[in-house]
Image 1 (cartoon, rainbow, N blue to C red):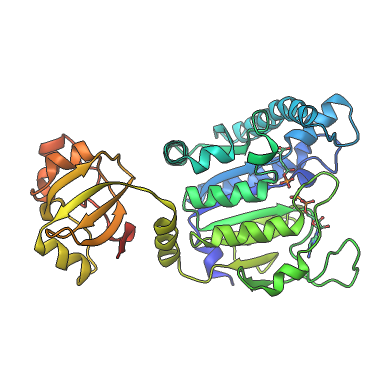
Image 2: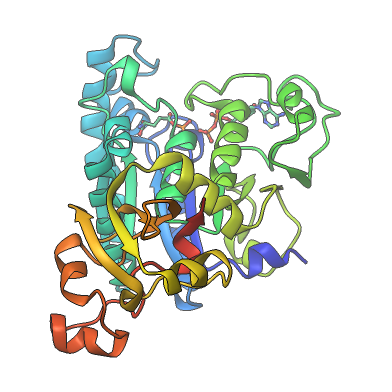
Length: 372
Ligand SMILES: Nc1ncnc2c1ncn2[C@@H]1O[C@H](COP(=O)(O)OP(=O)(O)O)[C@@H](O)[C@H]1O
Ligand SMILES: N[C@@H](CCC(=O)OP(=O)(O)O)C(=O)O
């Protein structure tokens, strides 16, 4: 029984080109509807879902009657633009049969490295997940150039897992999981059931590149698992054609390869926060708040803040300093600088009357605080 999988609340499911297009013969709608049935069941069981779907280039190639993947960038981009239409149509109509809406999100590398766009993508995705809509994500192939593309959707899916703070990344592929050698040329290769994502021994087994339709192969899947682990997510690499694959994962069955993060979700998430976010403002705390944070491991309440400096929005990183200017912690603000100005020095009960609403009683929650 895999408790980390059965207990996962937020899943990112990534489906590769090779699987989606029945080895290049157009979109495999029958297979798609089988996955949709299972995703809807997960949804009904309370799992929050984000889908990363490849297949635009492959679907476009099939619509155009092309049998070989073009190498010219503009031809690939044209194929992707044509194929993306069919791809989202197919997902939308399949989910609609169960009364579920989908939403198309096309992302580039720039979107996730630019702070503002990153936050926008994050809040849109969160809003969609809250609305119980299934976001269907792909790379925005039309506008990317070689230097700035993810290239394979494994990497994109891992960054999405970081973005939405998923507990689980499920990578569906055309093999049963990760083998101890490339099964294409090693008939005796054995499936790896469990490993730590950072185990260096895995580099050697994931050596080869992808198939004719997919791009990444196991190497990018391993890298994706390592990226996902940085925000504490577990990754499963598993065969998308295995019968009832998602249902069985949810039930805790030992199928596919489970790659685990080295640290717990919270520790990993804090480290990731520390490394990735620029600070936008400063909160000057009173002595009581300084000791609550540094000795009591508490959240920062508005009552313990004396001064707000800088301009930040909800969700952005702020520095928390002692009255003498010493840095105590960094964390994600639950309120913008303007809102914070109005509620500092006040008890949390007063937030509703001061702002007209209350997002959270804390100005910075302790899960989002990194002590310096
Ligand atoms: N150690 C390994 N275990 C499993 N598959 C491997 C391994 N090394 C290379 N591969 C190859 O990776 C392929 C899957 O990657 P890819 O073609 O990119 O698919 P996708 O479209 O699902 O991303 C498999 O078909 C397999 O041949
Ligand atoms: N954005 C591309 C996906 C790139 C790709 O081939 O990814 P994958 O099959 O997951 O290795 C497409 O939709 O065709």
